[in-house]
Amino acid sequence: MSTESGTATVAAATPVAAAADNQSKAGGDKLAAWSGFSLILGLAGDMATPIGNYSLWLMAAGIAGFVLCFLMRRIAFARRGMFHTGIFALIMGTIWGLQQFAVPKDTGVERGATVAFLPILAPIQTKILPLPQSQKLLLQFQDAIANGSDSERVAAARELYAATEDTALHRGMIETMMGSGNPALQQSATLLRFAERKFDRLTLPPIDRDKNDPLSRRLLSFSFEVRDVDVDSGALNLRSSSRRSYGTITRQGTTMQLPIVVVDGGNFQEMLVDLKPDKDMRLTGKARLETGEVVAVELPLF
Image (cartoon, rainbow, N blue to C red; front, side):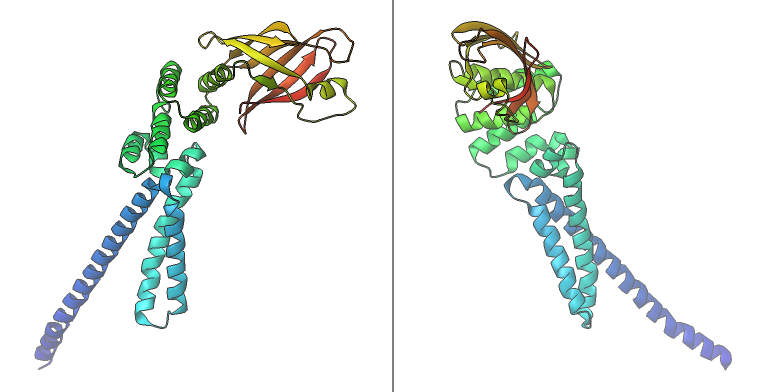
């Protein structure tokens, strides 16, 4: 009798266990499907970074959904929702975090983590996104100068720069080269900008204005002209105070020798200017007189 009872119990338990296994498997499949969907959506938002900060918005939506489900946790479906929205927020947060910590960071923030870590996908991103033509050209420019030797990158930059006459696009290209951190590209950007500013009156305003310093006061009204630029050698032909002078733009920076009269009625002195690329689209450095006076100066590129 007991044997029959035991057999009946096992027989009854078998369908229950099978049902539990099926339910567990179905739950696992749903979780895998939801995780896969979240990952695909997150990567799509990351690839669309040039047209919108979708990764941040998706992360915010996931967090908001999780908080809402937590507040409604007494309801059964809300407890399940907490789990799914938590996974969604975690995936989106990870992608957004990778954007912030990508190297270089500007690439992650502007192009997304996927392109930052897999640059080979950059041309695909540029091609598939519905961007204005000018922005597409700028992204293509970024892609062209991102890889290769210094000479290859400089050649690509000059070719694409010469292929457009759009002033705003030129500025964007100069900003990209100056912000690249690559000395060869920064040199090329400075040369291109100097070449465009031939015969303009360029200034060297002091960074820290000292009204008691004669050179600092003089530099507030001082200017010079770029008469010619040799883009290949980096040589500059300048004119200051009606006198001819020279300079050079190299990968180490820009140096110029400019004649200047510091005090009215005084004699001309040679001023040696040594500048290097800085943020905010300018060159910064020192202006030094032959008598030893030194003033920190800047030269705005735009």
